[in-house]
Amino acid sequence: MINKNFLNEPNLLQLANEVFNNVIKFESKVDSKENLLSSKVKEAETINFILADGLGYKNLMSLKTSLNNNIKKIINTTFPSSTNVALTTFAMISNPIDHGIIGYYMYDRTNFGLINALNWNSENKSLLNNDFFKNQESIWKKFKSFNTHVSNFQPENLVGSSLSNFLYEKSSTVPYKTLDNLIEMLSEASFLENRFNFIYYPNIDIAGHIFGVYSPEWELEIKKFEKAVEGISQASNKKTTTIISADHGLCNIPLENRHNLSYENSIKIYGDQRSVYINGTESEVQKVFENIPGELFRRSDLKYLLKEPSNSYIETLYPDYCFVLEQNHIIYPKHLQAELKGYHGGLTEEELKIPIIEIHNF
Image (tube, rainbow, N blue to C red; front, side):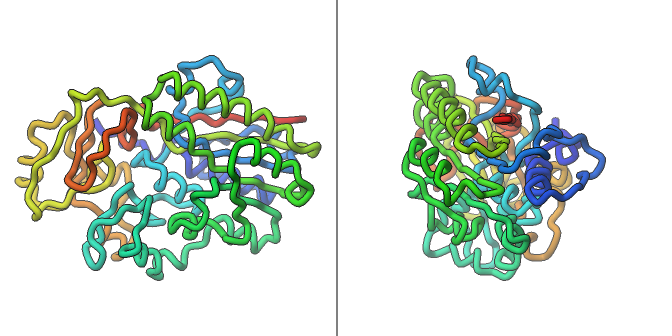
């Protein structure tokens, strides 16, 4: 059953807005929702925000770590619970339906067809040159207009990617090689005066995908991250608040619950493998998914998760239907056959619920 209150519950978008307002010291309440950050954040001279890819609340609570002791709130990530959707929501401080990145794979009905909206290839990254995307103002552009000293720390292999170039200002983006390298840089004089540091950390997600959530390899990555957070939060002598959250959690998919789809080219299947977007007639769609465990959402239901398209351009990217898989099931469309152990993108609490962790050095 769809959660009709999903978009009104405390979520990553609200967190992004509160982080931004605290950085620029702007007093603002988001609608009538509760504040997600403590009042102590207002005393901080420096604010670090770490987005730990794959650090879902339910996943994290399976372990005993110092991170658990500092969880202040539990909120929803975006729908779908996908990295590129969440990262764009944070960077643009807007809903997916407003910034236009609405899934791992998207489908442009007018020009580009099927698009990998995480790893944009040379043929379809031109979509991002459309005025709809080019005219959006990220937090990095806003920080620039406020003359706020900020840095965005990214793994060096991600710097310069199409998604990175869309989300971040080149002048504020800093590549790092390892966690030790990151902590070392945060201790350098050139960064100590920063008001805000954004840090993207992907390794927990990578371990969850390859080895599975709760595997020894995944647990090791959590422990490494826990230790790194200690170093990051203590890197400066200035009053520093380090906020940690995530883009999603993960769930393991047993081999017997993996479903290969067979369908004609008249049907377009994309999105995420646990929240599947579909273009086609209802009879065709029902035939393709008739033996797959899950629920078909029509547009009238999908609006509770994505909202209705805000303009004619988004209409060209908006799906006809969405099929949401039951827990621990996944589909393989024609363009995706990689065999991983952990997945996300769906509506289970394991995937949707993310923590807000606050650590202060004062």
